[in-house]
Figure 1 (cartoon, rainbow, N blue to C red):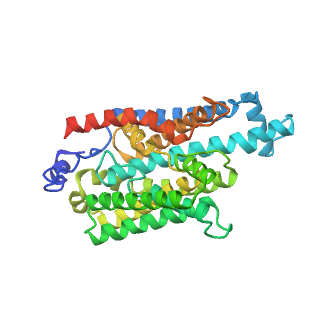
Figure 2 (cartoon, rainbow, N blue to C red):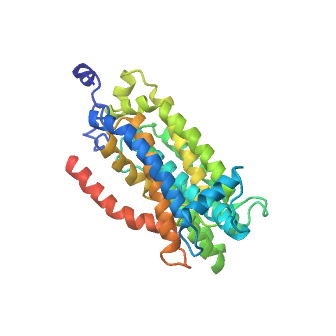
Length: 369
């Protein structure tokens, strides 16, 4: 960007005095990052395809990559797999939807984290900062433990409704308090604490031991038992939200200078914030309703991708999505196999990996503040 543009687009006055974090992205990607973008996209797609194919083969049943390829081809209408119905079912009905949903969840959470860190100008923002995860947890617990809906409402549907209610509360609170980025974050924290308390109250007062165990396992993130319906729904929501975010890529670049500078550059700040927050909240709600609360993906992966591509969102968002997809595919594979036959919640594994990365991030932001 030219020197004149840098002069015109100064950070919003007083931002550092109020203690806000420095911008998480600059005015645009470096030339080095721009040159790496296409190789990273290509390599990321190939790595994702290879990761999915190999991850499906890992487990008690002996399955090879050619078996996976033949089953997928057969179900797409290209010949017969030549495998027994049991092995075909293991690949197509059990492992493939789970692995693909892991990829979709990883990509979606990483994209949400990228957008929120830029939109809120907070390097520590993640998809759950708006209280969406806590609201989804409350909705799921109300359906499972209290039996709301009389069996006609599934756990996923309850979680989705709870997530939307939580986000609506955050929008209402932040609008009432002035609508600034710090008010949005504080409203999200308040909603998170409120719905977490409601979840704990319902579990402690109404759930039996078996229900408590099942709910807690889901709350920590679990991809077990998912089917193709969850894959299709979450993939569709991810595609729509990714298109919306990419359409606002230049706007997100402008937010790096602060909302006052973005407004001076012609950005409708209020409208853009509502659109992108709604898109990320909807995507997070869909993912949490299918897989539970999986933390740290949206917090750590955007920073790793930004180090490779620079901060221009047109290049950053696809790379972040691919990185998140590959990451969660292997995390889920580790979670379901390392203590086989016992399964570890996916959120536990991401936390074990994400906490050290989070600490490093804290030191980094401390050194730049």
